[in-house]
Length: 408
Image 1 (cartoon, rainbow, N blue to C red):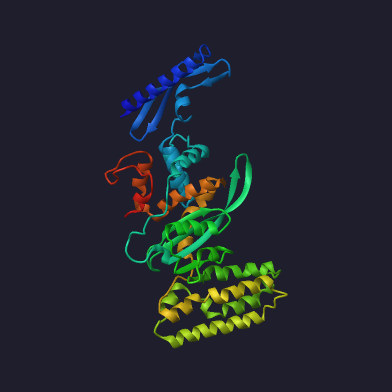
Image 2 (image 1 turned 45 degrees about the horizontal axis):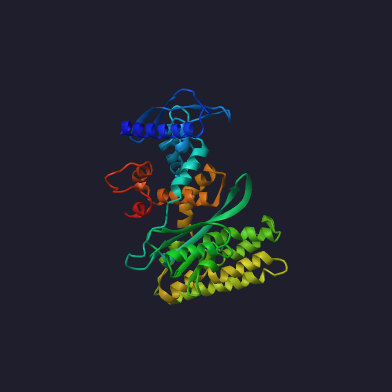
């Protein structure tokens, strides 16, 4: 295999050299053939790389580089592909350092530039969303969780501000595994909905989100049940009070009144312990929650608490949606976006550390590969080998779309 690869490189270099000399006679002077070695999946390849001197431009020219992209460093194949997406899902910085040291034992770890450049070319064809529409039963659009994060963007030569990187995961039923439904980078929430509807024409039955402005309106339909994440609901109350100018010493009474709302203090295990057939208990919990909401509302005059009042009023309808749904149908739904947050936690740190500033397509490309590694850890070896061009017995063709990886 190495002999065949070397012969191909020699033929490409000879043809490129002949084209340069024929096009510009007398312009180029031979400068020898410095040896190069590449560590490829099928073994080390040694090659005498031809070098010419351009008398007009007064610079060195490599004929092989004129015909194809040849990396400047010795290690370029696995070492520039693997770290970009493997380290993106290692939560420990110490473990990531060990991984880099293992990939480049002599200390010459790949720089960020070749990692990004090679990953962009590969990941442009990735699709992290599996096609589940042919399977029987409810589609993954039945239950959705949506969340996002901010990334700094970089255009050519200048900063381009920041944009929201959003991720939507879907499940057929609440206990079922959650799969990626769509990813999108950009400000408008309508872009998320447009990508989502291309996969799943029907709107979701249930949507759980942190209440980000514009996202529920973009993803939900009039028939969709929107449940606000109760973890974010409790966590974001101090921020709303801070926007109204109330510091920690001044907001204690509001937080105590908020804590007296039983419907917002439930966790998923407590909701599961509620008996759907015990309608009296469910109505009692729902009535107590609504009364506590009214008591809290009276403590929040609009003139003094504009942000907090608007925030609490939004929680009255969406925060208790799970209780109303359980009372009406006897079915439990997720109370939080914890499963989605768990997916974010596996990829977000490295996504932001590998590149401090991204282009919008670049962020989506890296996220696409990271999701496969975060959600399907058992397919690591197969995916890495396919990316490097190896054929494994488990894979009949090279992966050009991650449908193969998603299939289990």
